[in-house]
Image 1 (cartoon, rainbow, N blue to C red):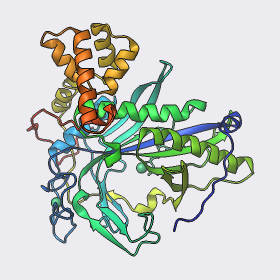
Image 2 (image 1 turned 120 degrees about the vertical axis):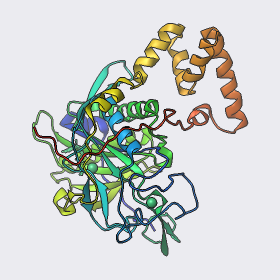
Image 3 (image 1 turned 90 degrees about the horizontal axis):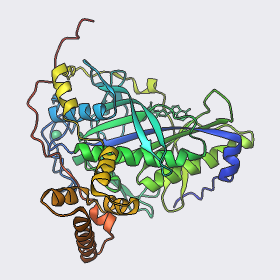
Image 4 (image 1 turned 90 degrees about the vertical axis):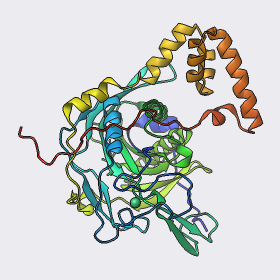
Length: 415
Ligand code: ADP
Ligand code: MG
Ligand code: ZN
């Protein structure tokens, strides 16, 4: 049984007339490395439950982790693409808490020493203007296992008869990308949130570091939102809506939380700092758990892993080899091919940029390549029983070979 929860809201325009929204987004992205972050287990999606596990990712006594160099490389490339500083020296940290899908009883993460920090990402909005999202940090961590609650009507633990745990996902490398609080977005906060996640997804796809499939959970977004009275300079209390798993849901969740917070504040109440669940079907959020402060996790530096000290020349080589940012590439190709805005949008949505680029390079005319591929992708999607965007959303892998450069160092550099 789900508890029948109705959350009071006020109309969106009314909320915006009285309050300024403050928005913060945390995006978890699963890297597409062949093996896990601290052991050699495979990361294949959809494998037989508990077939991709070992003493390290099961947290058995005495097992020792080793850092996946490719994971560190991807983290640095993501940090660079987000215009971040790359830490010359940083460590992993233990985030201690109990959860059945986390066999070690701590998550190996980073705390006050993230590998990348202080960046930004420029996001194009529907009206052609740009909003600069400031990035607080991008840090390395590992995913947890996956619980399945069986026997209830909803798949949630409430009402289930028993639960199953699959540890295949435990230890898969994750990068958590955290924005600074976004202020001044006003009524465009929901649109900015969606555009940011979309821009980030395109960037990560271009980097080839992740499958970035929100519906499969390889990219997940937590939406932090608070309101403050118009013109105020102190932030209000935030809610954190967890695991919002589509672009459209990100936009809707921000909008809903603005309306819900406004109803609480307008009636003289105070917002509870808590996590919330997003309900795709009804478009509302419901209360999750009261949020721990960082102290409760008793973070401390991970004693079983050496610090990460990426060599400066390695970082520079990674910087030089970054791909052209997707938005810049789209503008360049549209100019070169002479496509109208609408034609370009269809081509992008159908995932045809690479194919048309190759076809033109092989001698076809841009107009001819567009017409042929548009027809072909529609035909294939139809044969597959899907619409074109769904058909086009195929995973991409980083085609470059694994870098063989030393990453770890034992010495903190003298400053
Ligand atoms: P936590 O560990 O609680 O998830 P993080 O630092 O990882 O905290 O992320 C918090 C996110 O919430 C960041 O994106 C931050 O910018 C944002 N944030 C912090 N304070 C507020 C606030 N008052 N209103 C809205 N967003 C906030
Ligand atoms: Mg967080
Ligand atoms: Zn393992």
